[in-house]
Image 1 (cartoon, rainbow over the protein chains, first blue to last red):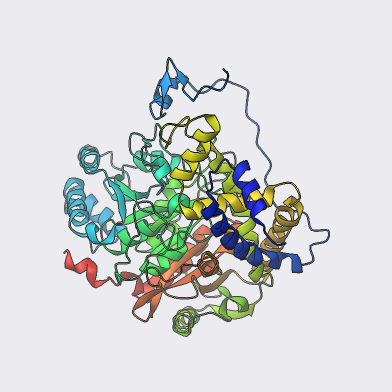
Image 2 (image 1 turned 135 degrees about the horizontal axis):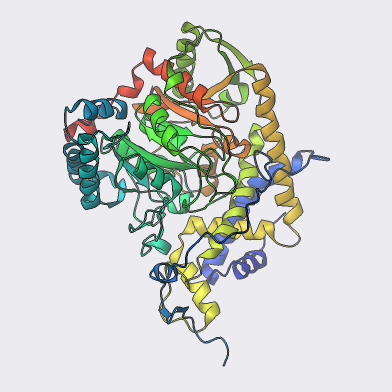
Amino acid sequence: MALEESHVRRAAHLARLAVSDDQASGFVDDLSRILDMVDQLQSLDTEGVTPLAHPLDATQRLRADEVTETNQRDTFQRCAPAVENGLYLVPRVVE
Amino acid sequence: MYEKTLTQLAAALKSGEFSSRELTAHYLQRIEKADGQLNSFISVTAEQALQQAEIADKARAAGNAGRLAGIPLALKDIFCTQGVKTSCGSKMLDNFIAPYSATVVEKLNAAGTISLGKTNMDEFAMGSSNENSYYGPVKNPWDLTAVPGGSSGGSAAAVAAGLVPAAMGTDTGGSIRQPAAFCGITGLKPTYGRVSRFGIIAYASSLDQAGPMARSAEDCAHLLGVIAGHDGRDSTSVARGVPDYVEGLNAPLSGLKIGLPKEYFGDGLDPEVEKAVREAVKVYESLGATVREVSLPHTHYAIPAYYVIAPAEASSNLSRYDGVRFGYRCDNPSDLIDLYTRSRAEGFGEEVKRRILIGTHTLSEGFFDAYYTKAQQVRRLIRQDFLDAFEDVDVLMGPASPTPAFDLGAKKDPVSMYLQDIYTIAVNLAGIPGISVPAGFAGGRPVGLQILGTHFAEAQLLNVAHQFQQATDWHLQRPAFAEEYA
């Protein structure tokens, strides 16, 4: 499956990653080589094989629906780039 | 002091040969003198370490010291450590002071061990040479022109150079075992779910696992006993009792059935590495083990499957770095999209971007089934290979890496770097444990023997590795670099 620059552009948009025109062609080269290697998978017959998401085939455990964590907003916001009155600041979204 | 293994240091602290404060100061001094050349630490927390050492000494004087109290360690900079910078080797987290500690860190603190600092690593644990760190490459103490391996390269180099007796690493595709092999130390990747991932910065959550890196299997047994166990804060950690890993170390190996996967001795294997590994297997035969060839027929599909699954999980995990809640933010963003896209473009390095883009692409509409579903199907076949092999043999043995440590700058093409992990990566896909132990040298650089067991066979792996280390002294050999700072 050949990779085109439009694929890289789409992935960069979905991943919210700024990619310049120069970088895009470099990524097309690198990612094409990686995907060529990955394409070896296509030669294997996996008809009827159940996909494996977790090495131990575990299922999610449930716990009681109880409040266990205390409010640590101030602690957690200390490592934020910009906060005010307990809120995270970002550029204006709604005019 | 630095010549001693962790086990010997614990005995010396217990007998009062020296105090934890003296021991801690000794290692801090070695780091200060030698690490300018190695670059194995990102942060050294000298003041906290000395304070912790005094607490350990007081506990010992009061008769309250546990088995490892007062032992200095280092943590790969992927373990969140409350109040300490936790960078994950990335510019993105260069300003991140962790507000809480990983379960592994809490358990080590509770055992009374002392953290000397945070070790260098490939950015977000993505790499096999430690050349992808924002903080610069780490050098291999056996040869300063060689890489230490990755991604836990700082941990491996620091232990090999005698800057710390042991360190914690993480392993997603070989990141404990390969650097352990390259630096001539012992490194254990436990079964997926054996050690809590809580507070370990996520790369690929169905593959990541933490483990000890030290001088000997005995040292690793002591440390695994501390860090293993169920944790309600990690939904994938397994509720299963933790055996005494030290107790079983001396069990005899007579009757042990060893399998040599023929795919691990094929094209691309350095002849000197092969020779060292085959010599090691002969040592096991002399200890009463029997050896037979086995096959893991899907071995060559492991790297392709990994490079779908790991980047897919990474692209999701790394979406949290948005420049809003923590980590790097670009200057003067014009709007919210500019803030996201530029913070991420400026904060992440090249390899991380490649994996985010690959993962996003393979998960996107039109490609998901061909890549992701297919890779997960192949993952099941790879796991089945191991389960089938363990029907016939107790453990598998082979090289940890096809070559000894390569030169810094030698592998510029990402795919050629990925192919280095041919013998380690399938183990993570299958979720089984593996250990690398020193088994000689190739061209003056260390060779690692990899031993694999079935799920939760850590005690057996440590026993098998320990018996080898009772019969050989490869694990006690030191690079000349370590002696220069004696």
